[in-house]
Image (tube, rainbow, N blue to C red; front, side, top):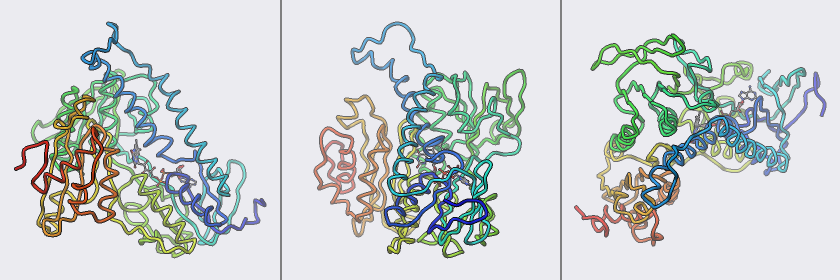
Length: 474
Ligand code: FAD
């Protein structure tokens, strides 16, 4: 490969090797395109290295640790000594998982003919890109480009991350000791997931949320289930509360918060974790030189085929408006690759599931009851509580419910939502049902295996039709 002043010619460059970028590059390789994937850090992006996977490894560990005392009632002797957790050792385990996944992505890229370049990319024009590789500067001339540079934590100026006292999610996932006290600014899904994990490991956790409820994107009856469990774990939740300033004093962080109800309060903790949102990485990649427009939040608007305002330049994942989730980034990546490969592909499904790995977990797809009513549907709903499900009882995880939202006129399913210990896996059925335009009868008449949590869907669908077996029908 010739580098330096002579530009290397390629069909496509993909900037960013996260779940959007690497999926796009692999699909392009499958379609026979010459593709260069440029990643400045580690393959797998935020998701594999400092997001989805490390956070779920932490949550899993915390769940196992937290479960130990409950095992006694099942006849398991766990000894009299209190269990301990070594977060330093946990880091090694986490790193091994991350390494395995990141190496797997590298292997898949290689086998699909993707050229991976380690370096920081900047557009030089609408058909050239420069890559700083740490010493060298390489130039690539491309026919098409995909921007997949992802996002980073949004941090207010008065809460600057120092990695010791004030942390972002990346720093929190690198802790080698469990903090005794932790204040989390932002009760969205990242704050709640991490807060519950640390609470289970023994941290005294306070959550400050500006909105009226934690997990503001959820229907209130879903968020209440999580809030109830959080309180049971000893977490303090302060809704409708705003953080005004933070100060490090005597080795602790003091934050000042205000709320209408309580006025000004001061909270002291060993660490503060800031999880108020994310911002797209679109500032320093030469979008001006390429002519690609961004909005006031720095997001790149795209059409159904992921094309930007410059038709041969595509954008996918967290740099585009919409929910910032890995599975959406991957879907967009595959669509952009297929469009470039000449396939009629589009991101045309409204059914992007959400999952929150709280306790209990929350997941859903399609409309909530309120949204369906707002859109003018006459709505029928069916709900089944897991405390009436044999498998939930047998695994000691009875919190939550499965809920179906149905168009009363056509019986088409409009939404499926679930709060449960295993909502993240259960929602797969919901995605498929909505994607296949199932009617509520399709779920009610399908034989669901017993004893499983999936029977929650069966009974919720039956409840919507007025004939659930294991609850009294209203
Ligand atoms: P990213 O994953 O952000 O990848 C972008 C890549 O581009 C990075 O590797 C970066 O180094 C690289 N890059 C940036 N600029 C350049 C440049 N100029 N040159 C070269 N390379 C560059 N989502 C879920 O779906 N489920 C979850 O459970 C979940 N949990 C999360 C937990 C946490 C703590 C966090 C922070 C996020 C979580 N997410 C989750 C969100 C998910 O990680 C993101 O939505 C996803 O990673 C976005 O993918 P992406 O490909 O758009 O970008």
